[in-house]
Length: 297
Image (tube, rainbow, N blue to C red):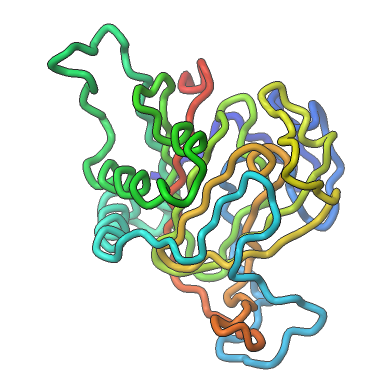
């Protein structure tokens, strides 16, 4: 199944427009960065990628960091991983269920908001329509993130009594593929996004779009968390099994995307220099809350 977000509008000439557009109109873009509030546009292979095994220092390229960048609202613990057995189970389940042909690279799943009238003393939590394997991943993420994120953020991600519909988007990336820089659809998805990398690691690029770009009715700048520099960029390595959370600034003020590369230039684990890390096949699983009416396609 190859599913494209129906709200996405893209101009291959470098401009984009959408009713939900971050900038409420057409935007001339620079450096091939697509700030189109689109979700998950998989890119073609990059024929100019560095040959596998080339260990020469990158010219004029800073290595991606392995530690969290100073982005308010981004939670990325470099030591947090999805448990190995579960990561393998989720990866295998997605491959066997959703990506059975070469043309399959994306699927979106929806769980409608719980019906309050269906709750009772004997049935406080109506059964979920999501696959058991993905529910197991959600339970594990709740446990693993509890000591990592503030209690208010954990409650946002895993409310005791959910009132919104949940969406899961699963993407398959082959080596050399990436995704255009974007902020997830503002008119469809709420705050609190969880991303999981399975299979290969990769570098994700975050870029600040400034106060004007972040204008959104549900966004409020977080006082006391520092000041962002407009157009600041941070490259961060997401290892296999890693988890990141985006809220506040990270959700609404910073784009995120993946460059089309077959290898990533990354800080070494020991902090001594940098190295090229070859990309393999990668599956990303992203959990988001739908805004009211956002689950009506």
